[in-house]
Amino acid sequence: MRISDKTNPTEYRAVEDRYDEMTYRRCGNSGILLPAISLGLWHNFGFLDNLEVARNILRTAFDAGVTHFDLANNYGPPYGSAEENFGLLLKRDFARYRDELIISSKAGYDMWAGPYGNLGSRKYLVASCDQSLKRMGLDYVDIFYHHRPDPDTPLEETMGALDHLVRQGKALYVGISNYPADLAQQAFDILKSLGTPCLIHQPKYSMFERWVEDDLLGTLDDNGVGCIAFSPLAQGMLTNKYIDGIPEDSRAAKGMTYLEKSQVEAQLPKIKQLHQIAVERGQKLSQMALSWLLKDDRVTSVLIGASSPNQLLDNLESLEKLEFDEDEIRKIDEVLTS
Image 1 (cartoon, rainbow, N blue to C red):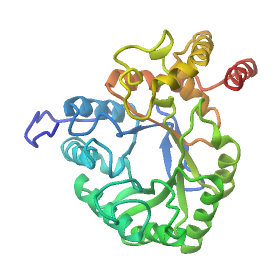
Image 2: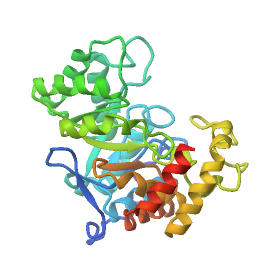
Image 3: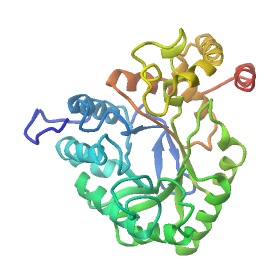
């Protein structure tokens, strides 16, 4: 749904105590602090969604101290619509707070037709950044990511494009996403040699997807690079939604992108066991899943989506209980490795 600049002119003023409760963590060796929970605008912010709901989610997030909003060029649907709608809401509600925000975008996946609208060429990345800035009405983004590795473009070209964007003033920092540890190390070395060190890596990481623990987190720590985990709730599997089976109105039941019914069915025994551990901890499963990621101080932030302000606030409660005792860790590991 598109919204007019004249719709709902009610002035937004952020609450004065918005920074009192949020936990902030330093991002690698940089001067940047990120909220332990950041808001991703992948779903629920495109033209097909209710923008007044999105507006209330953003307001609720910022009032709770969430200062980091994460986008990408192809978020929507349709492509570009999340950035365009965010730009309208930024202008209406958050322009006065721009310097209190970390706004990021990315490029690397399919965006426009032809050979220059995908992957990791200098042409694609520079054009993508320009388009994103225009859609959001910004002079610069705080972080610009390469969204995924490109097997055919030399890494020097891709990292050189990120360095170029910083030198142009279109991005303050750069990051990478979905890079395995060995390729990430190569990217860090190139960026360091260019004088634009990598700020952050955004991997897919959850209780059900733990590949980052083998060597990526160590690589990030060794290089002073932050980590922000996306899909921390495994597309909703690590929530109370599926503990009694697969609801008819759920994403898995409808065969929606990124989550198949068979995936949920395979994980149901673990979901039920993890839910019981969460109950014993006094948390919901979703809250425990977020706390579990944040127990490792090498994880700078976790990136959540939200379909309502209440869902956002519910997830933020995970920050109230980040500690795990040895018995809880043992029980969770036994479930995840069974």
